[in-house]
Length: 247
Image 1 (cartoon, rainbow, N blue to C red):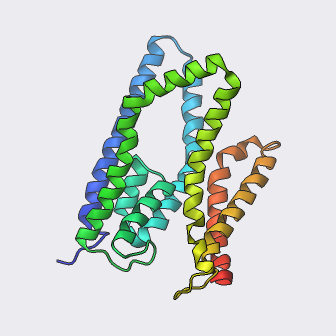
Image 2: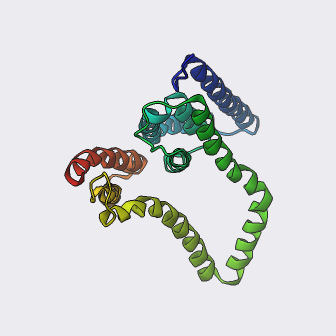
Image 3: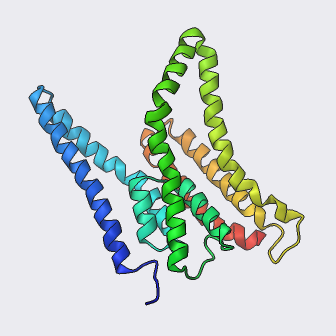
């Protein structure tokens, strides 16, 4: 039997896990509502909070759907749907899948068909790698938070600088992935020399759109919930003319 990344069995397995996660969410929502009544909280405010949260969850979910579609060309629908529905993000999943594929001399977005072994390898890399964050938090989270609290109590300014430095370091790691193909500008190959500029140009377009939306949020606060999906969608759309231009 020929392996397919969109086999119905994979949809059943992924759907079962997603259903369990959704069931947990509903369970704790019901428990929280019962608890709110037991301690005398205003139920009108509770219902309004639930309604508002449900409405504004739709906007960020758009970026998740786009991420699933972006990865589905190479990995099919079940695996990206499962990864991005439970624990994961487009930035991490794309890098993890890309690294796994490159180890097998393949490239994300250009794979016509995967074998069962290749699919399992990619799934293991994407899953095991992100599990580090799950077990690392209970192991070092309390000590790290305690150290940050002590630093903040001694010198608030340096504590803020340290936190910002860690955040910038995290962003720098992802920026490296964007700029990693710059070598194509001077190394000959069977590709356009300027193709390495495509992700940089797309990132610049998304950044400009985010800045514009940030300025617009001064007047329209509600844009804050839609800024990410808007910049993501328009950035991906800009990739089409940019790729046609740069090659």
